[in-house]
Each structure stands twice: as structure tokens, then as C-alpha cells.
Length: 208
DNA sequence: TATATGATTGCCT
DNA sequence: GGCAATCATATAG
Image (cartoon, rainbow, N blue to C red; front, top):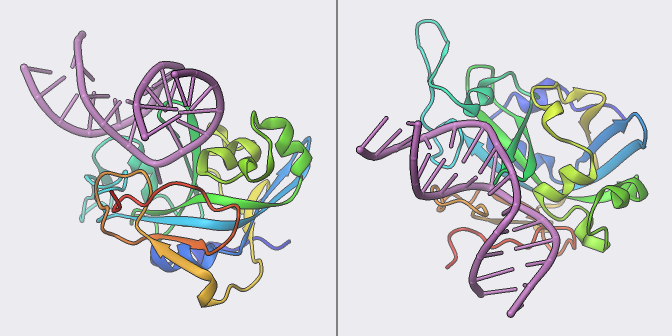
């Protein structure tokens, strides 16, 4: 499979998130061989977005240096860089950095449908049954053996990269606000394949 | 320095 | 449906 190039991610975050639907996430694992999943759910986070880790960071217009501290600094990395972070002190979430270097933005991979390597994924998961394998952002990183070690890596070449999958028709895509956030809830920046069994079962943040 | 919270999941009632 | 796990970061004092 040919990896999606940096230019694919060197664009505004929203279309990248939509275009990743139907694409493939591939981990050429040293022990398991090739782990492959079809992306069925994504979310976008941008520099001016209150829900983004870079929300209160910026770049110095003179030097281009990032001002402020914290993990969000890594969202200014070059497009196609892995942004992996620990949520609730428990689970690792996988993002891919978008937009040019010096502009913050990322797409969160929220769910995939297993394509190959299911037996290895099942061995890694506590609850390996059916959709439970990969129907959530923390579940898929566990299944794919993706964690802290991948943070900052290039996702435009092995071992972990994306590849073009099948073309998705517009009517197959559904949209909602994002899940699990408390600010920026009105931005409808979650996209998923309607009726796909492997979409996560969270509730959009603007519905109470 | 101390405390609150979160881009979640799985187990409990 | 409620809630604990467990830690990096943000915010307050």
C-alpha cells in the first residue's frame, strides 16, 4: 500500500477529516505483521477551536516560535506527524497533525473497522468481541498497539501510516458535533459512516 | 504547591 | 445509568 503523502495533511483540517473516512490505517507491526483498519469516524480540532489542546497557544509572528507550554505545542508540528496523548490517565488517543508547520490542527481517529490482523487485535483487547474491538478512539489504539512511543512520528511512512481506501459517497457520510467535550460543542466537526457498525457509541456534546 | 478536570472505557447496580 | 481508574495539564492561591 502506498502511504498518503504530507501534502494530503497540509490542508485545512476539516476537509482532511472528511477525506480520511473510508481510508486505511496501517501498522506494519514487527510481531503481528500488517494491522489494517478502515477509518469510519473522525473529528477535527483547529487552532482557533476552544476544544483544541492548542486553544490558548500561539506562534510569535516575528520568530515563528510557539508561545505557551503543554502538549498542545506539538499540534504545530509539520503535517502528517502523529499526535498521541493520554486521556483520563488511562487511554491513548491517535491524532494526525494537519495544516502547515506553525499552524495548529489535527484529526482525531475515533473508530475503524478491522480489515486484517483481527486475531492479534483480539489478543490485545480485554473485550475482543465484535465491534468492541475498535469502535472507539481508545479501543483502536489498544488493538493497533499504538501508544506514547508513536508520538511525534511521521505517519507518511511505515511503520504506521494511512493509505487510500474506497471512495465514500456523500450520502454515506453523517455529521454531528464532537463527543466528550465541554467547549466548542456547537462545532459540527465529527464525521462518520452512517450505519457502519464500528462507529463509536458516544453521544454528541450538543445533545443533553 | 494543591486541586480540578478531561477528545474514555469497562465494570457495577 | 452511575462511577472508578489514573495522570498530564491548567488554574488557583
